[in-house]
Image 1 (tube, rainbow, N blue to C red):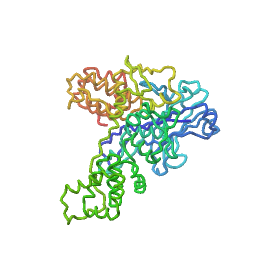
Image 2: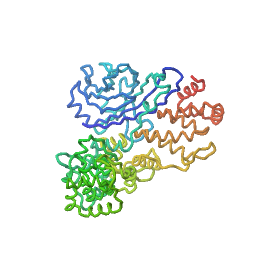
Image 3: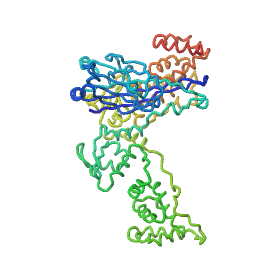
Image 4: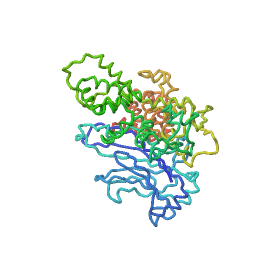
Length: 574
């Protein structure tokens, strides 16, 4: 059994500090993809469960639990689901509204989940860290009915849990405002998503054996980031197959792990000083090594820098040795002797360095302390590498047909950025009947923007977006519709960061002509910030009068009448 999940934290709008205590709302959802349903029912007895990975909503840690054969004897013949507060320090009860629902289909739909089969699928309950108050009420589905439903496909299903948490905040103690940084966690970005993909191993198609460790990775990611990997995995010198193993014999296991971590996330995790001392002679990281230059290490570092063409590190070593006091200590330790045989050419560079400066006999010993970096680490190029991979269409393994156009992509990257794509492309729920996946409810230009964001974490600016302000009289209907459609796509595929970007873009297009449509969209797709912007716009009598004149409220009455109550409350300042 395997599963995939995604935690998407929703928008939080800090209320105005009108009272000493005010309510702050957090929201998010988690998807649990369960494969091998029949095996789970057969192998897992009543009372035992499978559990999702941890996820956070509202600064609390949660998991989803699935009991394939029910939790107790009274649930025999049922499958049950629970939301569990997996945190032992919650003393004050927290009010949580939560809802379980099955995902209907993995393709994009306006309504892509349905709670019809679940008994008691929506509840409000107080949670705190004491049994049984850390568990939700059970959500039950009769297995006999579930197994005949459309929700079970290829022996797999996906369940979604939506969570809304309301907390009282003392704004006097908080310095008069609600700290936004505490209530609005940033959504995941491409580096975090790819890092999670590496850790999960989902869709991996190449295995490396390094020392006593085994590492699974993705050929297209490695090739996009390294020309050497590209030649090794795809060129004439390629090693291994989808079932073979590539042996790396000239590197330590821990170093290769750091290398893979950097390839996927464009960063190297912090390690303690002992670990740094052990790996610094192997990992070619100039900026890190510069901090360790002293009279004992400079000769070794200089040889390393020369052999591996590390100009910045070499320059730092030579600068250190041009100090007479430092050079004298190194020579007393015979530190230059190994360079005669290993790198004699570097001695010539050292002589040139010494000859280029006037030696002051009173030069103060600069000591063996850390030197400042002598060069800047370049900006992250992960986005550029992956964007180039998308444009080149090299080694793609999935094809989409959207609006008469064809798009080729890489399964592992789509799966890393979207739990919906992950279930569709890597799980047993994937469609194997055709080599081409058709998407009939999206325009080609919108799907192209969706792919661009998945690979680059950004979307290109339109001509309208480049304007500092969008005038009421500007003809920007096309861009407005495009961003609306992209928001729906982002919501359908669970790409939270893109959804937030679309909200920001659409906020610039709010006018008397568009506000009703944008407000309906915000209400249907739980875009709280965008909804509030629309209501603020309508709170102006002149704007409201013009919107009513063009029938904007009639549109809202037919599309989402409940939002009219929110508008009334806004106008009445309730």
